[in-house]
Image (cartoon, rainbow, N blue to C red; front, side):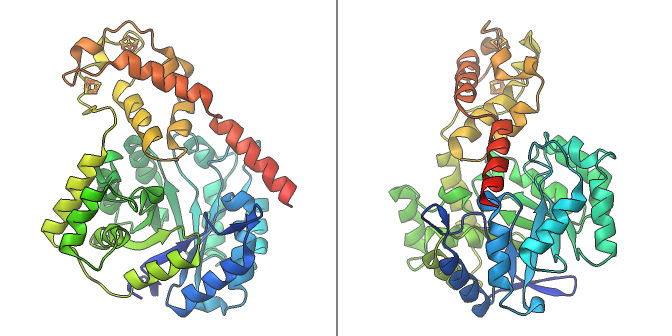
Amino acid sequence: MLYNNFKDMNLSRLGFGTMRLPVIDGKINEDETIQMIDYAMENGINYFDTAYPYMSSKSEVVVGKALARHQRDSFYLADKFPGHQIADSYYPEKIFEEQLSKCQVEYFDFYLLHNVCETSYDVYTDPKWHIIDYFVEQKRLGRIRNLGFSTHAQIDTLRKFLAEYADIMDMCQIQLNYLDWTLQDAKTKYEIVSEYNLPIWVMEPLRGGKLVNLKDTDKEKLTTLRPNESTVSWAFRWLMGLPNVKVILSGMSNMEQMIDNVSIFAEDKPLTDAERDILMNIAEGMKNGVPCTSCHYCCDSCPMELDIPLLIKQYNDLHFSSSFTPLMLIESMPEEKRPSACLGCGACASNCPQNIDIPNVMSMLAEELSQRPSWAAICKQRAEEAKKAE
Ligand code: SF4
Ligand code: SF4
């Protein structure tokens, strides 16, 4: 296993993300999960990442049960505060105590504010909930060893949060992979976080599986160069080449994935510049959404002052991943700035150098959002499922 130093720790570069654990009869397959965690530990993985809502709030319990069979100082456990979920109350004390108990630990090695983003920013920073102060205090008491945050925020929100809170954060977790490097501004996020000297933890390294099954022609480009390496290993090796990345979290769902990933992280085989260019080329070919370049030429002509490029980006994101980010972001906007507010006047389209039929994209996005459950409804459903599971 390859490791990275962080403070006085030697962290495995591959971390086990536990949001997609194996399932049997609609429940977490505990036996297989325990086998996977044992295999991970035997093969040098020492970083485990869970969160309050993962697996209908059962991930913490099963991970805690599996890890309790190992010495506490032989693994690093990360958990997260669910301020991004829409709820009635966000007082942190009860949830934090519950999490320690569910995970059967006295302290968390890493504790993160879960998804600091447009909808959660005000929750995390509202003095009424004293969330950040509370976790800073828990760190002082040794119940949190390192404090951090994960984020799917847009650039402006990320900058705002870092400007205010970077000095009390130890790390930052972002969605990063060779497709999102440009598609979701992950390059800019990587650079901004690095400017604040915060190390980066990676989530969605394979874009929820999208980078596993490439087109045959793309696969061929890679296997010609490295016949014994899988498309998965290319995605991981690309990330390992980023100097500020400490831990890459993979949400493994079965033993086969665990064994494959462990074998990839057994050896450092850095990509050459030419190989990295090939991946960037493949990523370009995958961006077959609406070809908006974010030039903003359309925006001044919009009577509703819609942020057209931002909305088109959400339209593309909805089609590239199963992420909730577009839902969360659009719901954080006032009604009059959402795609449903588009008048269909067409004033924007004549200014678009890419000849994008903007009114049509706004209409399709509004239609699609109206057919999906809202982020508020998803949070409510999760809370109900968690209650039932108790
Ligand atoms: S069509 Fe919609 S997005 Fe375009 S200018 Fe009119 S209101 Fe704005
Ligand atoms: S003018 Fe066209 S390419 Fe430019 S931001 Fe607007 S939609 Fe995108």
